[in-house]
Amino acid sequence: QERGIYEDDSEQDFFYDDDMEIEELMPDPLREGIDWVRDENGEIHHPLALRCMRFGLKVWHACDAAGLICEKESVVQNMVVQIQICSAKLAGALNSLGYDDDIDNGFVVAGLKRAINYLHTALNLAAQAEHQKSMDPTLLRGYIEEMFTIREDITELMRHYRSRIG
Image 1 (cartoon, rainbow, N blue to C red):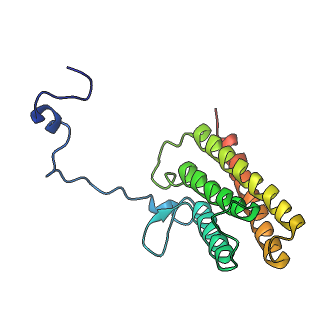
Image 2 (image 1 turned 90 degrees about the horizontal axis):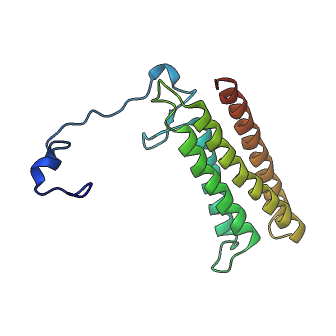
C-alpha cells in the first residue's frame, strides 16, 4: 500500500468523518488589538498585516483608476504587486499569533525578513516611478511615507521577536 492511498474508504474515515464537528479556533481574547483584530467581514488578521493589505488595495485601486495598471508591465504596477506580496508575507508570518500559545519566534522573524524584502523592492520601484514622473508626485510621496511607516513597524516586530529567541 502506497502512502496516502487506501484500499477502501474505511481506513481514511478513521482520521476524518464528514459528520465530525470541528471546533472553530478562537483567538486569545487577551491578545486582541495586539496580535489580532477583526476586519469588516469578521475575519481575523494581525493589525500590521491588515494595515498592509488595506494599503496595497488602496494603492491598487488608485493606480488602476489613474490608468497606471495595464496589460503592459510598468514600474508603478510592479510597485503595487510588491506591496501586495509584502502583505501576503506579513499575513503568513503574523496572522497565527493570536491563536498561538507556543510562538516560534524564529519563524516569525524569518517571515518578517521575507516581507521587508518585498517592501524594499516596492520602495526602490517608487523611487524609479518618482524619477520617471510616472504618477502624481503628491500621491506617490504619501505612498512612500506609508511604506516607510510599515517598514518601521516590521523592523520593530523583528526586534521584539529576535529578543525572544533562545
